[in-house]
Amino acid sequence: MNRTFLARNPSVLIFLAVLALFTIAVTVMSEGFGMGIISTSFVKTLGKTLTLALIAVAMDLVWGYAGILSLGHFAFFGLGGYMIGMWLMYERTRQIVVDSLASSPIPPTDQEVVDAIGTQIFGVVGSSEFPPVWAFADSLTIQLILVVAVPGLLALIFGWLAFRSRVTGVYLSILTQAMTLALSLYLFQNDSGLRGNNGLSGLQNIPHLDHVPQSVLSVWFFWASALALALGYVFAAWIVSGKFGSVIRGIRDNEARVRFLGYSVEGYKLFLFTVTAMIAGIAGALYYPQAGIVNPAEIAPIASIYLAVWVAIGGRGRLYGAVIGAVFVSLVSTYFTGGQAPDINLGFYTISWVDWWTILLGLSFVGVTLFAPKGIGGLFDLWTGRRTPDRHGADLGPDMGSLREKEAEE
Image 1 (tube, one colour):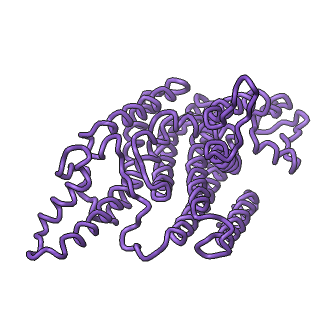
Image 2 (tube, rainbow, N blue to C red):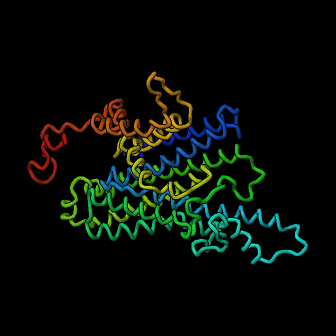
Image 3 (cartoon, rainbow, N blue to C red):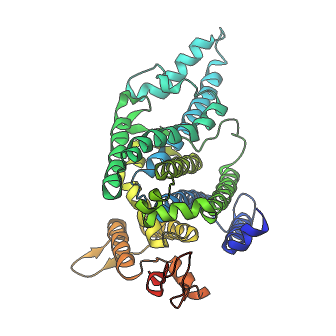
């Protein structure tokens, strides 16, 4: 980062400072490294929340800045979780199998070990053989590469087909939703190779770290999530602050005009769509080891709709707004659905927040859309005094009247 970048984006330094202070505070109050004020389960919740904030930043890039309402980015998030989950489950099962066969009178062959691992993993779906998609499950390096390669490749193929056909607006949103639904339905099948509805479980048990308590592991993953969010935020701010950011905002506001100026609109959209899919994959790879399980339900279209709601509530077109929206909704959701919010007895009916939370979230989205289109992030604009420049009808550009006061207010 150079001075010019920071001068144009003072919010980046503020965000990093707040995130660093938050990380230090949680570490000091955790059970693993501090005073034990914050439970291990809540540290995991905070770590998962940071990964959700990272995918919200990716969603804001593609929707808030480029105007592409993708209802499929949580599919990339889930794929990232599946890729790392395959290695976690394979290596953990291999440890268990090797330990159990160590006392055998005759040492097992490598093939017998592999067969035993396959039986342990796929016995729940009536199989014992490794599907082709598990070809590299024994290699952590390759699976880490696949965390970004698989979501990126899917986004590249889908985006190339969609953008070259110049599909835009609600039609593109429907296509991304259809892609997500198709992937989810495929993964629900037992012959998908990923254990169908059972998904991949036990991911919180990190191989070769049995001696490390969960209280410590949770803080380690919390640190990793905070670092990923910091790097993702800086990267996103760098993208939107330069020429690339100006072009994608132009595409959002008037795609035809940007194309007329000679820019490759499809190329810009495809690049951004693919990069944000990779970011979503990284976020998923950090989320699911903290959650402990990943299954096809995580990739259902409703998850991507929730993601759009988070960004809208936080304030799209503002990176910090996306983070605020994801953190706010995640923590409030944990409060209402975790049994912490007391039920309200009206006499004739008892309001159970576990059942009413989604309705409350939907009403919040409608309310923000109607009455606060800038979201929670808009409150910071009021606090900092940020306003649309008052041009007083001044001419901007080589021709007279290129930007009048009315246009500046829009």
